[in-house]
Image 1: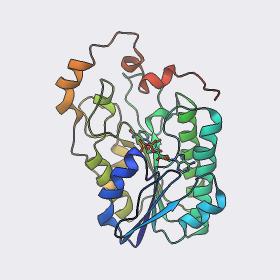
Image 2: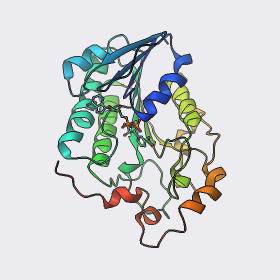
Image 3: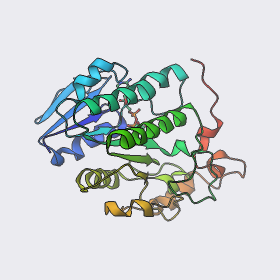
Image 4: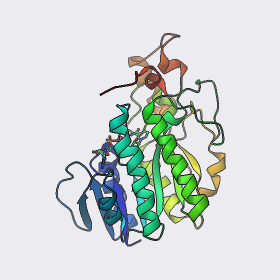
Length: 264
Ligand SMILES: NC(=O)c1ccc[n+]([C@@H]2O[C@H](COP(=O)([O-])OP(=O)(O)OC[C@H]3O[C@@H](n4cnc5c(N)ncnc54)[C@H](O)[C@@H]3O)[C@@H](O)[C@H]2O)c1
């Protein structure tokens, strides 16, 4: 590919993918509302607010694929979520429509289904059960991906990321963790498979304690290689056993199910 756009490039995952996705394109265009430092070799830096329609239209021009990581990534007030995750996703899909439908990898979240309990094994066709306004905004993003696929043929990999961090940090993440290497490989498959469509993919490593059935995404040929179980002994020594009424032991969305509706 000539140019891949990464939104949210100043964030936790964006900073990792800035390095790991280099081999996939001649140029990586990096964008965020926050500072991303200097452009390195084969990098372009575009600072912009996803809520700014005209800026996003310019941002997407000339890109062959978009890794959409930008936006609010935790529970916040509706106003904060509205700009990045609702207007921002609309702006992104409209810009993609204007510029030839570059393939999109959309960073959705397990918080679209957070109110399912941990004894339930989920397939992607099960109804959403968001656990907060952030989760609702990711449901909106998934609906935009579906709409633009049905109406315009826009292809999107909807990746419901579990917990993508260097290591699983608590009991719940023994089920939800996805390693950076597995996410990188998944993005590579999403961008290279001849026909992507608009699948919902569970973004998790091959965890023994996983809750999610990814068989519908088998056509991607993605085989996660890591397993949170390697960290189980050290995680459980710090974070377990949990009380029976602890949300981290009951709900797939863990503590997000306890968040209030933030007003500011
Ligand atoms: N890390 C995880 O485990 C995880 C789990 C589920 C979903 N996700 C999703 O993956 C994506 C990346 O996650 P992360 O952990 O790197 O989050 P992060 O909060 O570290 O990064 C998000 C980035 O988006 C930028 N941003 C926010 N609002 C913006 C706006 N209006 N315009 C432009 N940029 C804006 C922020 O400045 C930030 O750099 C997010 O969309 C998040 O919801 C991540």
